[in-house]
Image 1 (cartoon, rainbow, N blue to C red):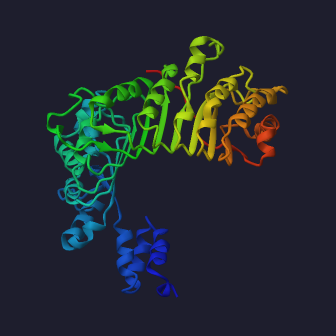
Image 2 (cartoon, rainbow, N blue to C red; image 1 turned 90 degrees about the horizontal axis):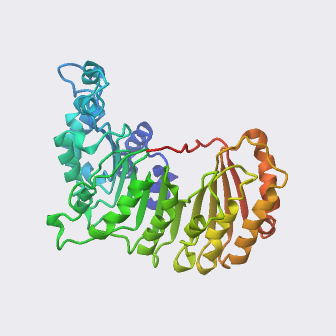
Length: 439
């Protein structure tokens, strides 16, 4: 029966097995009709571990039992499979020597015994010339400058592959953004996550001498998860770089730190770069400290920075916001209402998501809590464009014993939105809480 389906449906069904190597391999052996599609999905995603635990290897043939060595052997015999590999994830970038340099407290003997360079993974990385999506996972927050030079060169060359469209970088300090010049013609999505306290590599000249006359990097999606100072450095770096945000349709900025007050102007500068094309905006708004006067001119001016009416293509808006407690005893929701006052000008806005991180989630709920939410309700109803069809309110880490009471309080406060049947309240009690950090 499966073989009578159109090939597109067969591919969609088999795609649900992505990552299940044993099942896909079994499907490939079932019949000739399923073999090519199963092979495409089986080899579409590859994980490369550039260093591996030598304790699991058979000395002196250290590389013999690694997954990378087996895959390399397969591809050497079947080079026709190489074009199927489009998504590459790179792990364990740092080995024994690099870990010792970055963290002198580590026991050198233990580190050297545990992490040896995986030569097969490096050979594979150089072999994969059809990569479309690449993800680099540092995790241990080591610096790019501590990488083995051969690994730096391999990643540099990997960024030169002609079909590379998406790059995600996780927790690597001093990553040289100049490497993006290698994929300027094709790069569409860039995600940089430098939590908790990392910095991008801006030590080099902002514009490479070899970049003159080359095409700019025309991004369609940009995701930044970083500290506020690093976001500020990134915004300053853009004008002298080849990173062009004029065609950006999706912008995500997750910024935490001890200097929240600079976030909104920085995000707005990024928005202004792509105001004509931006369709999706997701950012962490500034939350004043409990001792901050929320009525001061300085705080209010931050919320006057945003003019959503100048983003005519905007369809989805997500604002992530620190809130002292669900009852909003500090009346910080008035500031959020001020930020949303101009959304009526975003005539294509369809979905508004308000994600609240509750700092003091175990504080007993105040019976007058709905009054604070009514201010927000009135602003949204008054300024909402006709296209708005969903308002999602998300709470992060509400104790189980308060969940239902909190939902009822918000429903009472946002009664007009509820009456319009566009309100969706979600309590994300099981999600991990973001913890503020200091530099």
